[in-house]
Length: 186
Image: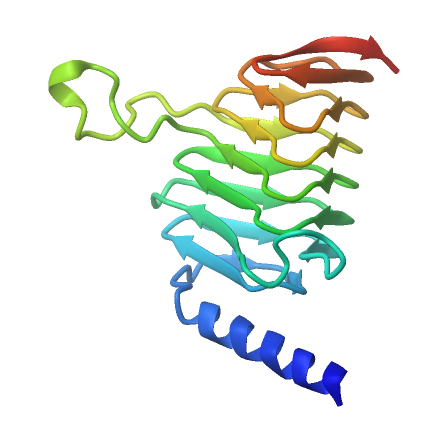
């Protein structure tokens, strides 16, 4: 009986959060174990076997995933066999790509813009220079990671827990820290 109540509670949460979604440019399907809000005017494309939410992980009952292709020209692309934990957020004003076989830990954030102009007199204007983010194939991103605009994470690389990624890294390395730096070759 308890499992049935929990399933019903989770179903109700997913339905509630679906009302906050407004993106009409979605292709492919997403398997969500946690509520997911899909917003914006741009394109969001899901490959095969893209999963969001992990029951046995922190933030499962008290958070949701947020994916926004903010502008008409924004593009978000998920490859195949991607597993994303709880509390994930991604906002694009240009383009964000996550290629096949990525694993992403809980409370991760990926953004391709500063969202505000850094010039003092133009702060309320949007970032004039958003830059694409690319997560190559088979990348493992730990918990509590932030990936900022213009970053490419090379194939097979690992991003350690708590990292702030502000620069691109090659494939087959472990990066860690704030700002993240290469600490090991794989």
